[in-house]
Length: 159
Image 1: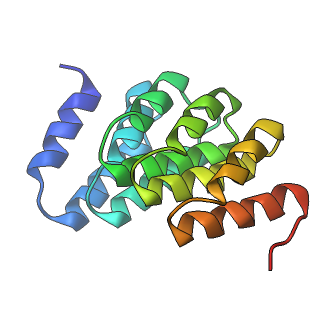
Image 2: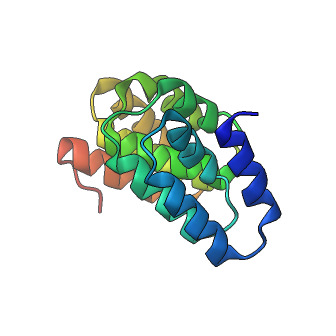
């Protein structure tokens, strides 16, 4: 059994949130590939504190694996996809831009909002086209995020 899977099983059996947080924090310090995979998988933890720790750790890493990035973005739960989009946007992982564009059409409004924020970090013509579409989204939170992202990338302000 691979090390990441062993830790994921241990986390699944651990109901105490503080203990799960300590386990993930300890694993984050290990400079091994399985540790990055575990951080991506920790984005699916139901505890926001664990997810926040995983985001911070992924943002601090010098490089990220494109396959683990894509894998986390394609699977539930929605809050894991939103957290993954935050990492992708802040790190400006250009190879993930097609996945971010795809996430902009997710049924979950929070995922679409996170995609808008990530697109704002990327900038560029393709991101701007998608953001203009997101300005017409049914969710006011998605529309607001799209407007903020457009303002960030172009300087255009909406009143």
